[in-house]
Image 1 (cartoon, rainbow, N blue to C red):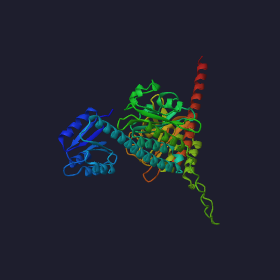
Image 2 (image 1 turned 45 degrees about the vertical axis):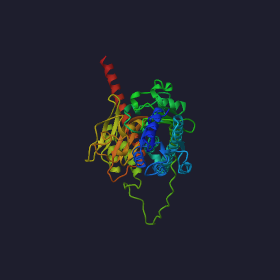
Image 3 (image 1 turned 45 degrees about the horizontal axis):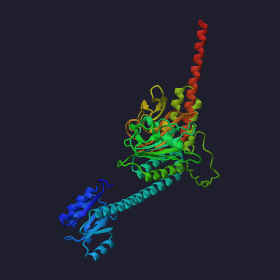
Image 4 (image 1 turned 180 degrees about the horizontal axis):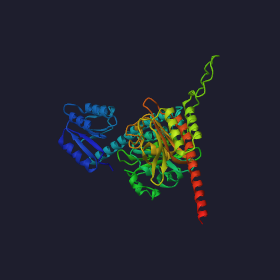
Length: 504
């Protein structure tokens, strides 16, 4: 049945016919707007969209043929039905050549009129859907080209978080979704973890691992089948898996991200901008994007062309011991390792490590945060502020880019972190002012222990390669801190046990 959105423009200079047509078509469920002449018809067509026009060929002033041409110029998909007398066959043929889809002879027959308008509406709907699909495919093609170009960049493999964010953003743009998310399977545990989200802040609970088979994403991941749901709460396949408070609309989609042998993640979309449910075409587009995610996130960075060796003059000598090496990342690793090997006491190890990072990167502040499970917070273990600005004492574990790094184990290297949808000013800045940010996870045996973050001056671009070096070096330093603390606790425990024995 037609819906209220199916508007029909009726143009006839005779009031009797205008009102008769309106009555018949409104009785059939169409929304009808009338005009008494060509100028009025063009004015109303400019104000609101129509899919079908019923146009009398004989109008005062501007002829029906002129109105037909101008209406079609404004909207080439508009379907125009011509009203004519039996004696106007030549004019009718000209109207059909100009793009009219049908004609009805006066006097009108109600059923013939309704059938003609319904045929025209079906034709318009198909043409409109095709045009929209072409537009979306063009947008998809453009986005995929951008993603391929970004993935082919040699730095992409060092910053997979940025590529994942681009994929989620592309899905939101192509699908008209208010929220999209990309979850990837942890290679160790197999659980799904959120690596990118577009739209409103998903909240701390979204960063919790999702076991295969649980929740919506886990079910799609386990089955390896994409789904589009018009009403999540009424969908029997998802009984008990949907949290109503997580969605603004009842319709959503999810598609597995294919790997070599089995899915490696899930791409989700919800909250359609126009509140219409997702359909088969939307699901097909989502599957294309999910397939692209599977290929691009495993994109091998092209090997750099070997640089031609610089000619070495005979008088050139090796640099003196202690001089700055040419590779700043190597210097960063060396300085952190020196701090770990030169110190034993945890506070000294942390201080020396942060000082080395600040000096090599020219960053301030540089702070190390470790997870306090009891408080569900990141607690600052130490920092080097360089006299510029102190970082925050405590941070929530599930907010902002910092929380995403902790949850996903993926570093962030962003010259303008505020452009990332996950950015939280109260978390990802030391004082509310966005700065270039390098934030890396601190991990031990696959478990996230905390994060280290360094704020660079505006003149310096955060390097994902430096972040990878920093992640490994600082994780090693923190491991030494934990081992030392464990050793001290063991010694104290033995001492207490000895005292207890003597007391007896």
